Image 1 (tube, rainbow, N blue to C red):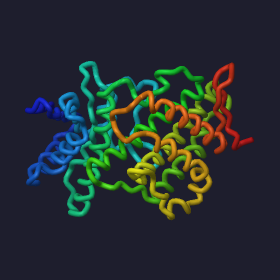
Image 2: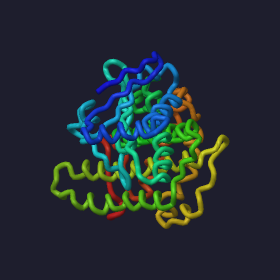
Image 3: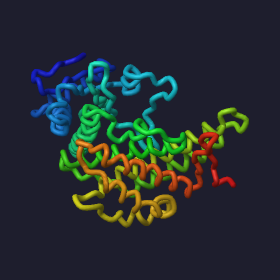
Image 4: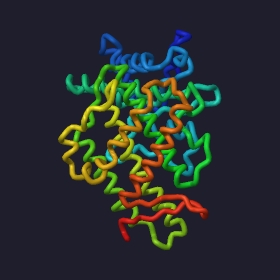
Length: 332
């Protein structure tokens, strides 16, 4: 079901893959609230975060099945879309422009369903508004075009460095979206020590279980090992990009809270590289009006920093005249 906006500057609202029961629950939540409930808050946050000229080109898609909704919009044959991300799950997703130039912000319907507990409802309301504003930042970047942080689409790199530059570009954009989302809603988003610890443990668990499961006689053994390693590490790094956004101020970054800084996993795997990581993120202006020429060098330096970080953690991935070379030094 699609409901076009009455306003030329308004959003289109689309509802997909929703069961009859889910539709009834959504309707009940809207009807029981004087201000339209979570859906109205969601629309308000997206509208506030988008540039005015982007609103008519953006659709808010409420879905009962995020996986099916993503798969209907892009070919995921080689890399199936999954909800799991490290220690958490995908909360929402923004798609690139379709053939008509429309950007879809996909929101699982469970965010909008009413809760019995008043305090839980209030917290969910704050979360959905921040989530919506975060995704709207991604939407505006899509509308601006030119893939502003995707240096690897403008320059040629060796296979290894291309992967690190690609990860750097995504982390920088996530940092920007998280920071600007909090500015729109006025909600300070914290990353607790338990969240950071869970992300570190999820990364280590992935390496401990998935790497040994790859048969040593697999002809793609090293390729598969590289993908497992860096997919897991990238998820951890994105968590750190969110943490950096939570600590960012107008003129720098607040210190890492002591309960995070004292975590053994933080001291061993993150702290030695954290200041340089923050320094590079600090060079990115917090605006969707990205100056590509000014930020390309930061993206490049971030990619190199991630490559050094990974190597010193025990994962050597570098370029040679014969192509990318990957080695797990932990096992030497």
